[in-house]
Every structure is written in C-alpha cells, then in structure tokens.
Image (cartoon, rainbow, N blue to C red; front, top):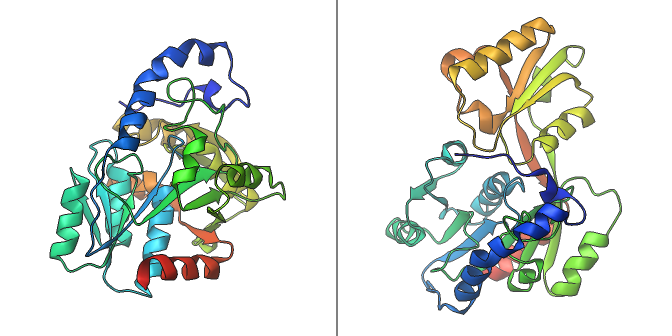
Length: 314
C-alpha cells in the first residue's frame, strides 16, 4: 500500500509529532550501523554505478538513471540498467524497459550476474544505495533542491533513510531543480564531504509543441513529489485549472480515471499527467489523456562525462 508523505517531513524544523516518533527510528539506525560494517562484494569484471537517494521518494533518480545510460551508451555500448523488482513500482520498471536495456530481478546480485553473462561492462542500478551486499564503483545520491532533507530526521520522524552525514560515503550528489543562486545546500554538502562532486540538474519538456498553452488544463500525478510536476508546467506558462494528486506509484482504478475525466469536462480543461503515470493507464484512457515528456538537463555535463570517464570507463 502506497501512502502519502506526512506533511511534517518537509517542515524546515521538526515538530512535536516528529520528536514523538524518534524512538521508532531505532530500527533504521541499527540497520544502517550493521550495513556500514558489513563486508560487501566487489566485482572485478564489471563496473557498477548506483543512482539512489537517502531522501525517500521524489528525487528524480529514475530519469537520471536513464540520462546516465544515454550518456554512457555513447562512450561504451556494453552498458545496461537494473532495478530490483518491487510489485508496487511497475511504473519505473516500464519506463526503464522502454528507454534502456534493463534487467529486473528480485535480487541485485542476480542482476550483476545476468549483466556479466551478457558481457556487459557497466551496470547502472536505479535505486539501491542501501543495498547490504554490493560494493559499487560509483555511488550517486539524488535530492530535490526544493525539499532538500526536509526536517532532517530519519524515517518515520522525517524523510531520510540515512543521516545526512552519510554523504561522506558517496561520490556524486545531484541537486534536481532550478538553482536560484542560493548555494547554502552546496556549502552544507561540502562541509560533510569536501571531495564529493556536486551537479545541478533541471527538467526540460521534450514534447512542448504538442500542447496548446491557450487551453485550460487539469493535471494529475501519483509521484513522490507532485509539486515538481506542477512547477515544470507553470514555468512553461500552462494554465492549470485544477490539480489532483495520488500517492507515489499509485495504481489507478477505473473509477479514479472516470472522476478525472468527469472533472475535466466540468471545468472545460484538457488533461495532462506524467509519463510515469501515463504508462499505467489503459489504452482506452490514454486516448483522452496526454503526458508530459521530460528530460533531465545537467549543468556542466562535460565535467560529469569526464568524471565518469576517469572513474568508470578508463
């Protein structure tokens, strides 16, 4: 069952509810401790990259995984992506299969072995920074610049899978979202790990020409950070008449779509959703609903390519 993120997770400071839940963070703390000291398996015949997060959901790791695959594909043709199978994450699995060569398994070690059997040189994992058994060659952690680390506490008191100090164990940070010139986040990151590489990214609409901006739009989404979808549309001057949100990875029922269609008709609006939501709709529903195709744009992409080339390719 997918639940909505609690409102207090993204407050700038913890509130009373957050503090009351702190005792329940103990399992996360214990798990992270043993994961840190456990010896992980290193693979010598393949380079492993992991794109993940320590903030739960809505950080843009799947679009970035696809983007990295496209970048590395130009340098090395023997690259593949992988994702651990979760029954409630079919949307991301479908996107990866549509845009990359991908391996879906119930065990990440099995994914590595499959990649080796297929003579792949590079494997990019979508998610898995908290994996207990694999020593990755390159660890990339994603954040949404708008939310950053929320209230800074561990689940369930806050949105973090690990304490922010764990950045000392990672190689690259991606900050997704428009940078308004405030570099406080970057300063905080570099205090924890002066050697970490920081890249900024933002989304560009690829299919903008298919939309009539003079029309009114109803938008709906079931993603980790629905406000990011709305922000992209508003920045592109779409006239949004109504927004409907669902929990991340939500599986739409016939009645959900009927209500959306009825509401759009009532307010005389066209309908847009995310590509991640669109792939879960029936063929009949897709005839009446459009999706926004977006692509991450990376500032200083050449620097990223050079870094990957030095660490992974050579």
